[in-house]
Image (cartoon, rainbow, N blue to C red):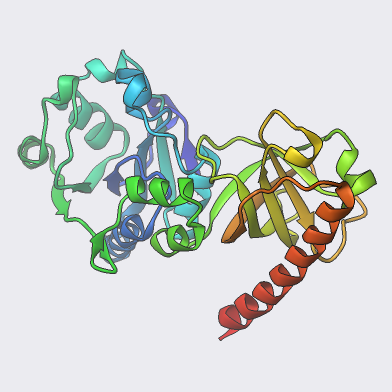
Length: 316
C-alpha cells in the first residue's frame, strides 16, 4: 500500500483513482462496505482504490473540546484499510490553514489534481471546504466540471442499528468489547511499546508485558481475554489482560498488563498489539498478592477455554 503523508508527496504520475473521503476511525463494517465498493469500482474501471483521510481528526483542530477519542491509531487505520484492498492512502495533515481551502480548491487541487480522481465516494452528510461550506451537491457540481463522478454512500446498518464510530466508542468504554468487535468486523485493539513495570507482578504474581498504549480510547478497567501480537515479527499469543490501577499494590497510574497464557517468549517484543475479545470481570482489590495470583490462574484457565472455542469458530 502506498501511503502519502501530504499532497506534496503524491507523485505526478499517480492515478487515475477512485477515492473515498472520510475519517474512517475504527474502519468498522460500514466502512468495510464502502471499501468493497471502492475496490470493485477500481477493478471495473482500472482505477487505483484510494482513501483520503485526515491526521489529526478535524475536530481536534477546529473544536478540541468536542473531539472524540479515536478508536485506532493512524497505523492501525492504515493497516486495516490495506487489509480491505485499498492500494493508496493520502493522510492529510489537518490544520487551520488546510481548513481555509474553498470547496473549489479542495476538489481542483486535491481530488482532480493530485489524485486524478474519476470516481469519488462520500457519505450523504459529507461537508467540506472553509466553514464546511460545501456539501454533496457542491461536490457533484464540481465533479461535473472536473471530470469525476460522485457516488453518495448511505448509512450502513448492523443488527437493525446504524453502524458508527460513536457507537463503537460507547461499547468499548462500557467494556462491551465483543459487541464492538461485531461492529468493527475485527477486535478493538491497543498498540504501543512494551515498557518496564515496577517488577512487583513478576515477583509476587505472574510475569506480564506492560503496554504503553498509543491509542486515545481505552476500555473500561477490568480483566479481558485478549490476543497479543508482536508487531515486529507477527507472532501471536493467547493472553489475558488487566486494564486498571493495580489496587492490590496501591497503584496510582493506569496500566495495561498482559499475561501470555502459553509462556513468555525468550525475547521480549519491542512493540505489541493487544486485541480485546471479551470482558471477564471488573478489577478487584485482593487482601494479599497470593490471593490475586490464585485469581489470575483461575482467569487464565477461563481464558484458555474461551480461546479454544474462539479458535474452533475461526477454523469453522
